[in-house]
Each structure stands twice: as C-alpha cells, then as structure tokens.
Amino acid sequence: MQQEPVVRLQGVSKIISSRSLVSDLTLDISPGQVFGFLGPNGAGKTTTIRMMVGLMSISKGDIFISGHSVKNEFEKAISQVGAIVENPEMYKFLTGYQNLVHFARMSPGVTKERIAETIERVGLSARIHDKVKTYSLGMRQRLGVAQAILHRPKLLVLDEPTNGLDPQGIRELRDYLRLLTREEGITVFVSSHLLSEMELMCDTVAIIQNGKLIDVRNLRDEKASDALIDVAFEVDDAERAAQLLGGEAAIQSNVIVLPLSREQIPAMNAKLVQAGVQVFSIRSVTRTLEDQFLQVTGGGSIG
Ligand SMILES: Nc1ncnc2c1ncn2[C@@H]1O[C@H](COP(=O)(O)OP(=O)(O)OP(=O)(O)O)[C@@H](O)[C@H]1O
Image 1: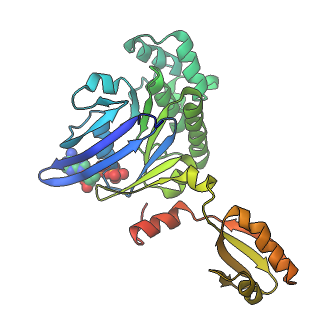
Image 2: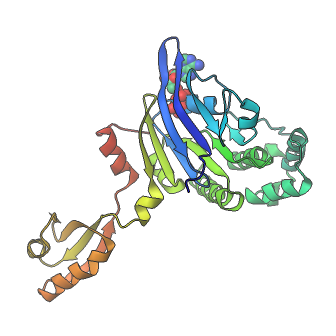
C-alpha cells in the first residue's frame, strides 16, 4: 500500500505582479527520507518553501502536509512542520539548553526528556550548557534544528542548510539529518543549489528551474536497482575485447565501457578471459547526478 505523502504539492503557483515565480508545481514526498529541492539561484526554492510553511500565500493550487491543506487547515498542517527558513531566533547570551527550555515552553507537551533527546539527536550534548554566542555556525544550526523538532513534527524543512558551513560541518549535517529520518521517522526537506551535496545527502531529488519542476529522481533506487550500469573493463587489447563483447561497447584507450546489469558482469569477464584477453580491472562507472542533470536540462548550468 502506498503511504500517504508527507507533503503534496498540487498545482502550486506563486504569482507576484503578474510574474510567475513558481508555476504549477505538482509533487508528492513520501515519508522517512531526506528529500532535496535542487535548483539554481532564483529558481523558486525559497518561494516554494515560504508557501509550504505559511510565510507566503499560495496563488494557485494547494499544499498538503500529512493530508492537511495549508490553505484551509493551516493550524493542523503547520503543527506537523518544523522549519528553519530564515535565521532561527536565538538568545545568544543564554546557553543552548536555556534556549531550548525557553522554546519548549511555547510548545505544549515538550518534556525535559524530549529536550534531552533532541540535544542528543543533533549531537550538541558536549556544548549545550555553553552560551550560544560561543557556538560555531554549524552548532547554531544544530540548535535551530533541535528547536524545530522539539514538538516531534513529521516534516523538517531547511532552506539552504549547507550555506556557510565548512566541509566538516556539511558532513555532520548530513549525518544527523540521516539519523533524524532513521530514529524519529522525520521526513527532511532541504533546498540547495549544489548538486554534489544533494547527491550525498538525499534519497530523492526534485530539480526546479525558472519556477518549474523539471525532474524528480530517486537516487537510492537508481543505486540499488538491476538497472544497467556502465561497466569499464581495463584490458590489454580493447579493440578485440569490443569485438568479443559487441553491443554498445565504447573504447577509451585500453578500457572498454558498456552498459550491463550486475548479473552479466561475470559472464562477460569469462568471455574475455577464455578468448585470451587479459583483464586488469573491472569497475562500474556511476553516472553522477550532475551527468543526469545535464541530460535533463540539456546542458544548462547549475550552482
Ligand atoms: N516577494 C517577492 N516579490 C517579487 N519577486 C520575488 C519575491 N520573492 C522572490 N522573488 C523573485 O522570485 C524568484 C525566485 O526566488 P526564490 O528566492 O524563490 O529563489 P531560490 O530558488 O530560493 O533562489 P535563492 O537560492 O537565490 O534564494 C527570483 O527571481 C526572486 O527575485
């Protein structure tokens, strides 16, 4: 049975002064994943997010969060969302812990145990009793995420969370977002203009350009499936190997590359070896999200 999507965008548009910033976005996001919203600057990512969390009205269509309409049942819809869209409000002269206690007072039902749990989840235990003004950007962001998930939302929305983080900070972000989906069953929606980061961080990526959805890719399925992968054989005689394996083999000096399913690889290798071709290495050549992006956008650049 298909699970109810955590987020459903249904023909969503945003029109300001007769200009379409977002046009007819339709998209379902299933639960328990890190979902990437990818597009160049000005593509309409922030506009879409602002509509999702009620910071901007929806001109056309509707957005449903766990089945609740943002237009007609805003309170119910927004109760399922935790978000960092602009810089989160924090008291820099208080400790991280004091900030969380303060925000917990505004969310009914958040216990001390829940506060402790969220601190653990975002990996802030060691510094939680230090003043926020001593925190790095990454630590402030973790505190923001802890604050956003205190009330156990089904959806966490982060607008460009990697902005300003160093590579270590980005790696940590990736790890704790993954932990949140696993341990809390939260669906994480992140926007970014950086392909390489999205590829490492996300299970699914939607690509938006000029306010329009141009593609949705399930990255995990593509990695796990029996779909054809490009396999490179490094051999002593590439011409001969290509003749033997036929099909769509491409030759690059002493390497031949051809699309195969995983199961076909041993038989192809045996064919080469039996014919006296020496095989030095076999590896799969994964097509990156960037390759795919270039394919769907016809070479337009991003990031
Ligand atoms: N309130 C507004 N009034 C008019 N135009 C707007 C408004 N907000 C955004 N825009 C325009 O809408 C387009 C989409 O902006 P948006 O901020 O959604 O893009 P983005 O994909 O989030 O990019 P970025 O990463 O640069 O924020 C841009 O051309 C922007 O100038």
